[in-house]
Amino acid sequence: MELSTRVQLIKPSPTLAVTTRAAKLQAEGKDIIGLGAGEPDFDTPQHIKEAAIAAINKGFTKYTPVGGTPSLKNAVIAKFKRDNGLEYTARQILVSCGGKQSFFNLVLAHINPGDEVIIPAPYWVSYPDIVLIAEGKPVIIEAGIEQGFKITAKQLQAAITPRTRMMVINSPSNPTGAVYELEELKALGEVLRKHQQVLIATDDMYEHILLKKGKFVNILNACPDLYSRTMVLNGVSKVYSMTGWRIGYAGGPEALITAMENVQSQSTSNPTSISQVAAEAALNGDQSCISSMVNAFRERHAFVLNKLNAIPGVKCLPSGGAFYAFPDMRQAIARLHTKGLLKNGSDIVFCEYLLEKGVAVVPGSAFGAEGYIRLSFATSMENLKQALERIRQALI
Image (cartoon, rainbow, N blue to C red; front, top):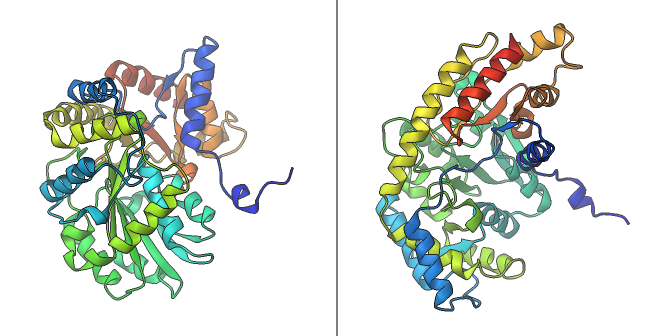
């Protein structure tokens, strides 16, 4: 059987692969601490679960409109206005089966073969592959630890060509935790303002998980005049610990939202009816559940940051948001390779080495940054203490 050229261009999710490998080893009796998963370890808040249970008991188990129930769309509209100062109508909102589908719908609806999509690296693993599925061309702008994992206006300007059709911003970032400040977004906006053909996709999935003081801002808060060509992507997965419920949403230009809904109508159709009720309860309900989770992430972040930077050959910047550390392991990897403990100097081999020591992390190359690792601190402090000690022991 010959597979399509399209599908052969994409790779299985490295994060899911690490999680699966760790689970397999654990099932075999190995003592593995998994720091690869990109999901909070907290339970979904009780009032959200109760809303879903009530919906089941009421028989709300049929098809809904493809793009989301009217009441959930209204909740999303209210959220955008409340949290971001953005005004949308129901025709400008699409509810999907998670943030990944929102981005998939967007790329399939907007990108033609050969169109270029600018993606800053380190990047979320799915961005380039989804562009490849649409037969577009990912254009990667590298932003390493030296510049805080954030691209500059000068880099953006140099990357734009007549074929550029989209630019992706992910802040707070998965995998680095980097957060763009208002002035940095204004500088990027100055460049984008000159290139009317470029659509902006701002992925705000980690919006509420800020690890330092300050208010979240996105490109539209910095440059309101870019409203007509900006798609705001978000969801309930991270902030309400609802990863398995699979609800993402997008707000943007009506014509593009309609096209994205057409794509969705021929793939999944509507998101799960029960999950939509739960998401509505999350967006409209008591938001105090967020602060306790974020406070725990801040405590864990401080611990992980200190422990990593105390290890020789490891350098880690503070994360501004999300629940990841993204340390530079290049010196540590080189030293292990010189000692003959690694067969080569790749971060993939290094992660295999750490797995043998009982810790599962994701290689930075999966995110377009060779020599780094992504470490999730969305797990208990006890697990983090053991994992960081195992990493320290592995590197001394």
